[in-house]
Image 1: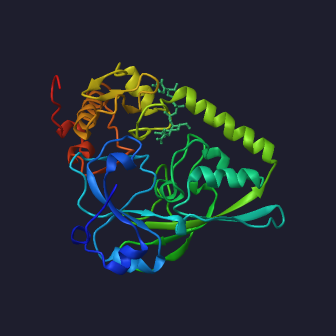
Image 2: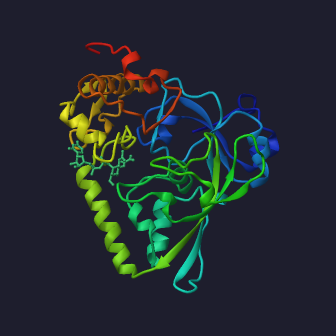
Length: 321
Ligand code: EPU
């Protein structure tokens, strides 16, 4: 990463003194290892939120569920730094304890702090790659649980506002892979209310879930996790794409995983966003034409072709790409 020149960022010197600003290819900041350049800001000082929020910007967590265009993005891309990454485990009262986590913390650290303290719930998310903020924003989860299952309150800045506020969980109309708050909401942290349980049992559950993922998902190769939402609980996208015979389908450096068909892997780290987009079009077109299913993107897209979210009957698929 190079230090960005002040002229390219427009941030005041005071701001840059407190919050590191650099330029980098987003390929370095995403698990898919794809994405052009951007100005990356690491926010360390809460008092600088207003200067940041006054201009267009994008929030980045662990970059684990994100496809970025090859030309990069124009707006500053903001990550939450150490100042937003604390995890505090409260003293149990009546068999329950409150855990407070900053949105910049790694979800894996939150899970291990809860397991160590014998507090049940988050171990169900073992192996989900995310920051706490990213997991809240996406309501990340597995087939049996979601991040927002154990959350009592979240601290957010809503779009158009400058000041953080706490929202009760009941104010979030959360659903499958959706926190229910508007696009552009910034998550600063959360409180979880957890029930005590045997730490050894929780550790064993987490280890079992991680092992199951390692055998059923292509974790050794760069990817953005599951590309599509499951169209219905009884119709997993991976099973559908597999049945369409699309495993190992390839465009340029992008390949439909032979391990799990809802993963597109950047096998040789040479794939471009254009390759992935062409493969996505091809999968969506086949699912629509042969099964009448509209596959919706689970992966977030930044500066990617708009037709990835259009109805597949309106999308032109290039033949023989
Ligand atoms: N299947 C196939 N072929 C495949 C892949 C899956 O036949 O290529 C079948 C499996 O055998 C199984 C069914 O499809 O019978 C469901 O597969 P799996 O158990 O892997 O679950 P999933 O619905 O594909 C969901 C989440 C994953 C999460 C797993 C495990 C979505 C879109 N995906 O996958 O989340 O890790 O459950 O809990 O909801 C992610 O969000 O990025 C992600 C990977």
